[in-house]
Length: 258
Image (cartoon, rainbow, N blue to C red; front, top):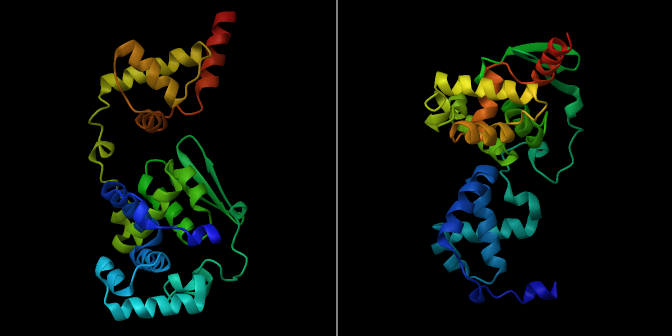
């Protein structure tokens, strides 16, 4: 604690660019109101006057005083919206949540099988946003962790938090990827797709890895196409090639031996 007392912000350098990027990321995870309380309290304990905190955060001075008084009185839970259920506030005791093992998700050739307490439902892989909305809803309600949801959707856990907030504010349209290059096959022409299939088949037949990273490097060396591993994974899934490498290798081996 003595070391904390020695912190002097006047000796530190601040980067506006880093601050902007970090604030955007933190806002997507915590939400703007919680983030404001964190910043106000952080400035307060580092010795900034309340009037200066008010000017820096563009909050009325009375609001800053009330906010600090509440935090110092109630502790950690005061950072969160009191209108939420107590079970939603970190640090509060709550009933045991449904564990991830109660929800099992299996990937088949053209469908996702979702088992909830023994009841199965199926979603076509073509319905990407239906699956995305369901997984984000599970994560929002604590039925699965953000980490597990990120693994299923091939995104980071922090981005899952961003999607939860976006869907809450904008309904299902908040799940649509605004990066237009991912929405249509602007890069993956039929010619490139055929080259991808050829490379996948070559790697599978020779016993080499068919991971997206390896396919990306092999394609670039053979054709000079510079494609991202993420795009490779996306199209391998859409083409129904995922999990087919061993089957292809066995079929070719059988023909050779025959």
